[in-house]
Length: 265
Ligand code: BGC
Image (cartoon, rainbow, N blue to C red; front, side, top):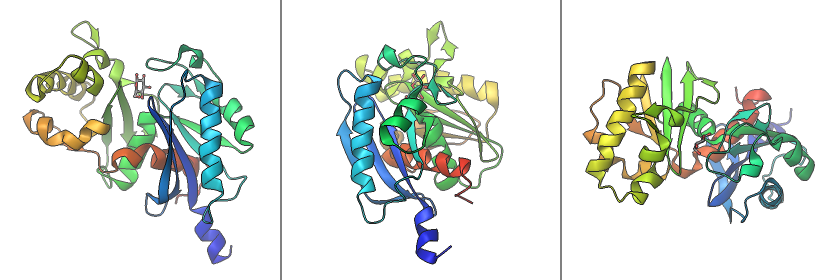
């Protein structure tokens, strides 16, 4: 393979579908960083599969027109905030209900005219953190918990993802955990950091008891304010903020493609 070709094959497009914005970028898999700026478009309303597919196509089109873009028929990684099994969404907790049991892979592959790999959003963030960020080099169980609209989770063991862990839906004190302890629930309920930390303590202690991880990594927008709540938590497991911030989903989506296509070694 020529040097420039080899370099290009380590570039993969990743797209992160969120509740407010859809973001994409060309990822340099050697560095785990975006090549150039990311492209962001507001999530359409209603956020039905067809409307979202249009926006994803627009983003991939814009990225594909760049000089450093990977080959036009190369696979694209896409995150989705729900359970993903064989390209089909199996839950729709915080998204339009038309996504339930929807074959995202088929729709997006047709719309983009190139292969697509769909992955749960927290799984993508987790993969990225373990490969390039706060979990780099950590053996054993690493749990990445994202605090956002919901609570997402990635279960990684010895660097390999166990997909769709869905630990945000653990029932704690009679409630689905994410309905009380997500970042959006904190805002909705007007909780101080101190009050919120009590809920997080309850949540992380329970998860720690169930899985005895080596490390917790906390992601989501709220990880920027980690100083407000992480020091208040008393756990035997180290707990640290995510390092890739709001690029983790894009990077992880691209990384997932590379893992499936053996590009990232
Ligand atoms: C969904 C997860 C998702 C998380 C974060 C939860 O409600 O069930 O699949 O990863 O929200 O978006």
